[in-house]
Each structure stands twice: as C-alpha cells, then as structure tokens.
Image 1 (cartoon, rainbow over the protein chains, first blue to last red):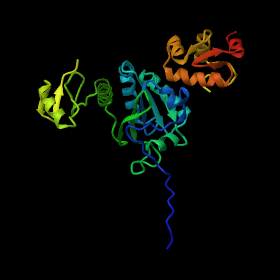
Image 2 (cartoon, each protein chain N blue to C red):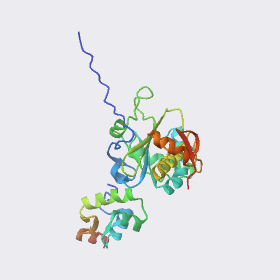
Image 3 (cartoon, rainbow over the protein chains, first blue to last red):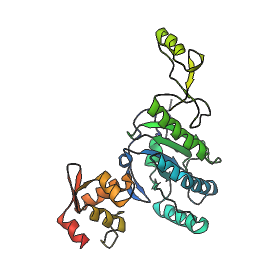
Image 4 (cartoon, rainbow over the protein chains, first blue to last red):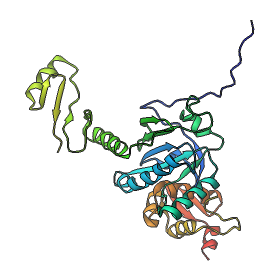
Amino acid sequence: MSEEISTTPTTSFPRLNEPAPDFEAVTTHGTIRLSDFRDSWLILFSHPADFTPVCTTEFLAFTEIYPELQKRGVELLGLSIDSVYSHIAWTRNIEEKMGVKIPFPIIADLDKKVATLYGMIQPGESKTETVRAVFIIDPKGILRAMIYYPLSTGRNMDEILRLIDALQTSDQYQVATPANWRPGDKVIVPPPTTTEMAEERLKAGYECVDWYLCKKTLG
Amino acid sequence: MACINPDGTLTPTALQVLKAAEQPKTAAELAQAVALPLYRVRSSLRELVGSGFLKEEGERFVLTEAGRAKLG
C-alpha cells in the first residue's frame, strides 16, 4: 500500500492568551521585529493583495481610525504577500488618487513566513493570498484576540475599536463585557466561584439577574 | 536598510535619532525626543548600533565616534 505524501506546507495557528509568534520582517518602514512593539498594543492585520478594491477601502478605513487607535496606545502593522516595492507603489497611488497618506508600516511577506506563522493563508479561500486576518497583541506580546474575514468582506473598523476598548476595559477593571457592549455601558462582574461568594454577590449592590449574571457601572 | 541610503548617507530619521542621542538616552526617551513611535525608533536603533554609529550602555544609547562624524 503506497503512502500519500502531503506537499502542503505546515500552517500553524496562533492561540489566544499565548505569546504571539515572534518574527523579523521587511516592511515599508524598514526591518521590524514583533518585539519592537513591546509596551504598545498592536493590531497586526493581513490583506489579500495590493492594488485591489476592497483592500484599498480597508486601508483608507484603518488610516481613518489610526488617531483613535493612537489615543488608546495601539499601533497598526499591515501584511500581504507582495513586495515592498508594490507596497510603496500602492500607498503612493492611494496618496495621489485619494489624498490619504498611509501612516503605518506594511510587511512585505514574499516568503510567506509571517503569514504561515499566523495561519493567514487558508487554501479553501485562496492558495496565494492572505485572508483578512486581524490579531490584537497586548503590550506584553500576548495574543489577545483574532478575527478572520473572507476575501469578499471588508472589515468593520467600529468592531475593531470596540474590541480594543473591551480588552483594555477588562484589563483595567478585571471585568468582562456583555454582547454589543460599548464604552460607558454596564460591565459584567466575574462570576463567583464559591457558594459564599455567590451569596455575597447578591448583597453587593450589583444589578443582578441571578447570582451568575451581575452587572455594574464603572467609574 | 531604512536608516542608510544606498550612497552611504543617513536618512533624515536616522540623523534625527543620532542627533537626539548626543546626550545618552533610552529608546523611549529617544522616541519622545524625535516624536516618532517607539517601534520605529527601536528598529532604527538596531540598525544604527549594527552600523557602529551608536553603542548600548545598559539601557541607554550612546553616540560613537563614527556616529559623531556622521553628524558633521
């Protein structure tokens, strides 16, 4: 019986709450290592290809929210399997045609090293392009959230900002955030882990539906 | 290299960082001095140290003779 030999390159997928896979990569701002972003939050995101319509709208949208991200201590780092020359030509074209200067670096991942590390190439979607992936990495280099979108769907910047706000709020106040939470909304008090804590919880003045679902206002 | 042009001259960003390092500073202090993101300064510092224009003394970056010569 003959054995089938797989020629598919090994793709790894990063995991939440573990160190984000380290890399050194050529970008439009020079050679950058993941560790250069230590002490800042980072959104590492991939796009399928330069000079494509949905990606162009996304780059405009990422640039639009960049000041809001900076207020939250967040940097942006793009990636696609294109050369640095292509990235430079595309960003110059965006500036020339749309009057928008792209302020963040873009990885030229021609050898697919970073894309493979982060599971950005999903052959069911495309064998040659990265999907629209988003990785949120905290100031200690821990991967805190990830989202994968298909090639056909541009990302929602409001959701990315909301996710950053939710993660930073959870870290600052040791709380969780409910569905559709927005800054200023009530947050969820972590559920009790003992019967004594459950009883105390009901006396603590939180807004409780029952012992396991209590909300409070911050500040 | 992002700091060094093909003709061997330094880019404006590299010159800015070198000038700010005339007084030894940490990466964070240099980023503040040149008003650039910390990641970008760290990347430039790696190149400038690798090229011998700066050296590391503990957490601070210090201008070398070669670096001082580049400032003219």
